[in-house]
Length: 112
Image (cartoon, rainbow, N blue to C red; front, side, top):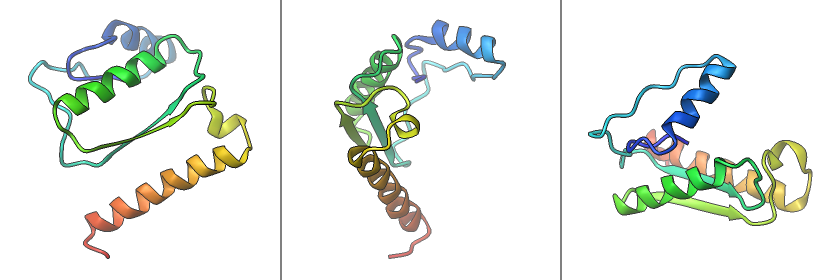
């Protein structure tokens, strides 16, 4: 994950170059938007070396800026669990994600 403070920016730039996508450069003046509801689902057994540290850093930064954030820590999950593991807990994580989206998209349209 990218963050306004540039945490792991070199890693993100390298990966972006490898797979051919562009990543905007964060500015020190950038902040995590407080007007957009955030949901982070963290896979506790993710073994990709940079993923959990970047999620943890992002979450701490959001909390330090008092940004509304919902964090779900699926402790037993591996990277890409939503694609690879058809389990009751995976389905529960997907259900919670969809409920978050429905609630916040309806709220943004003024729908009860």
